[in-house]
Image (cartoon, rainbow, N blue to C red; front, side, top):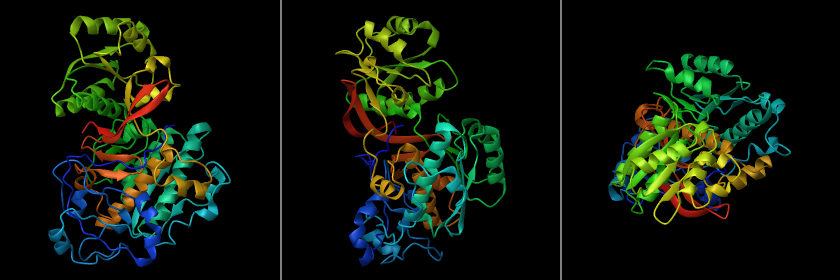
Length: 464
């Protein structure tokens, strides 16, 4: 699995949203590294502000000032919000996590690897906060599914210790990796009237079922399923191939390329990839000349032949692969001299789910950082005695986001205005935002494949 990116940088053209600076307690100053570990861009909508573009300044969810007159566990601002905003429109909120907080999980650390399924059962409710959150994880599922579920459980525990213990009551339910059972648990969670937000499920079929349900009063769902497109009120958390392809295309368009070709496996996901890539290119004045669906059975020769007959002198070719291998298409492109001096090859994060192929050489890929585990990594490893991966990061970020919203706007703050704000959020997986259709967009590092390794080209790129 991919390791998580430490921190995303805001778009250089962004105009940060105004915010109130909250003073740090003197006893916390020695713990500044933990403040950086908790860095999160909180919705400008939550603070009543909006930037013109890009992301607002880095905020820490533990210290988001609660709205006037609202009781909460966030520290009181050192000065009135209005005066602070007027005096410095780019000020940020500083973290104010008690020094003792965050150590609470150490005593229950696993000897090595994720917490055992038996140990999980003894601790399925975390925190004492007023905001009720339900989390659905495949804790007792066999194989890697269960292991990943327990990694997400450990990530959630660390986020609760860092941020959520006094803000959230997190109830974790075991889906057993069974899509039907996960669907039933999820439906119960969104109709019970108790949970303000649901994190999970990670089962794709269950998430897709939720996306088809109607109803405006249900709580939002932050789905953890791979390859989930999202739906109204059911947000896709994980990096999608569409987002990776869009960010890679945008990075190359930003360097001057103007005519692009997209090759994508025929199927239901092809339109989502096409739409995201086309939108990303339009930001830079570039165009998607043609989208060519391909079948794994044609060996790649047909789609490459179609490209040469339909498009004269493309600047770049984007190759998506869904859950298949891109090798056949890449071999056919290589026979035509692509990548080369005049045509750039752009891959996606799905390529990296397989061993690095020599055919990847020279391609550009936007993906989460492969080597940097982010500011939470050292603390996580010290607590749980294993290296966190992207499963840990996604779970940590969604619980931290829930804590941030609860601190900022209270239990009733989980609404479309906050979750779908254009400025987005900053977590251990980088800068991301949710769209009204339930999809997510991410800013991420941009790499080139050289000698079988990913070489960093840009720290951050995005398709939005």
